[in-house]
Image 1: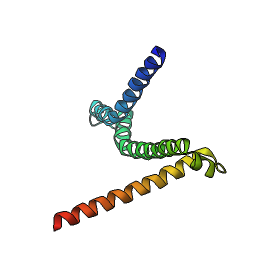
Image 2: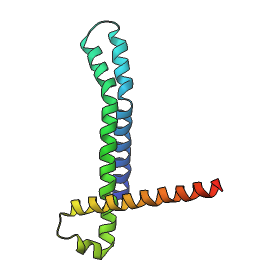
Image 3: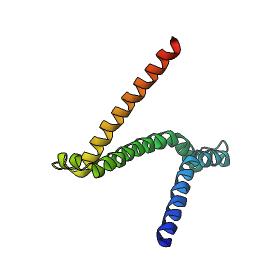
Image 4: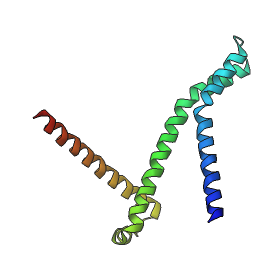
Length: 125
């Protein structure tokens, strides 16, 4: 139990540290640009690259995070609904979990849209 707790704490610190370093990468880029001043130096080019790359990195992380979330959520349903697990046993488990996550996600979005539509119509009357 203590080992699992220590591993969980270290993993959390590591992940949050990694994310913080990604979020601050543009600050490092701006600092390198400032250090280079007006000269067209290697530091300035690296700084400009870091600043320009942050939006692309964030977009990639959001895609990867959404993909992972769909797989994890689908995996929870597949693992805990035995009939669903047997129904999808013909396909690779990762694909089954992704598809179930997508279906559940779309159903949840549908319920959300319906809820807000009903709530909006109640406020209009």
